[in-house]
Image (cartoon, rainbow, N blue to C red; front, side, top):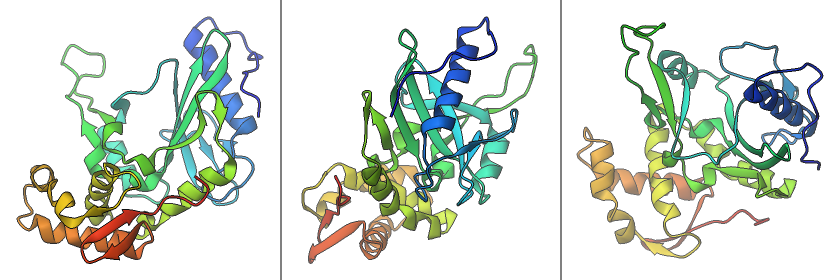
Length: 259
């Protein structure tokens, strides 16, 4: 796989405009669909409100965000109301995060966050724009990347190195069970998955997960039965093949086969 970007056929004064064209061309030419394995994804016509690319086989959609520096804990996104509405639709896009080296015009990292990790809890409502702003009252959103579990950040390129395709597809398949979960319960599952992340691939006990009870109670103040809710999520994760049940109250995260 090549990492260099082609020079855009149209001249752009802005470096950000040039980078946008470079990155979009690169994704069009080299990226495959991690949802179904189709060897290409296609670009939508310009100026669609959310998605940038789609897979012609499975119809999954992708929103591309690219920048020179590494992505941090949160990512500025579009209008809050539009984002929340899109979360409830089947066409909600997966998120492509691409960081590049401007000097060499090459890809440094590509990480995909599957759409089934997008729940209301990871979308932050920004303050309305001031009355003096051109779009006074407009309310934007931030994607809280820090709220996404490790299993929800799938690297296709990392540090300039291509991750084998079979690894990417296996990681993707391992969390597809989330798409079948009702939207109102997925947030809890994802938060418990984040707690499981702390243990890596080592065995852990139910009491160790209970240590996260205060944090989960703060996230969900309306729930006064946090421990039973934790046990319920562990059972779903076990039945979905995400966790291995070892003995009474003992679990281990099942690592993707190719990793």
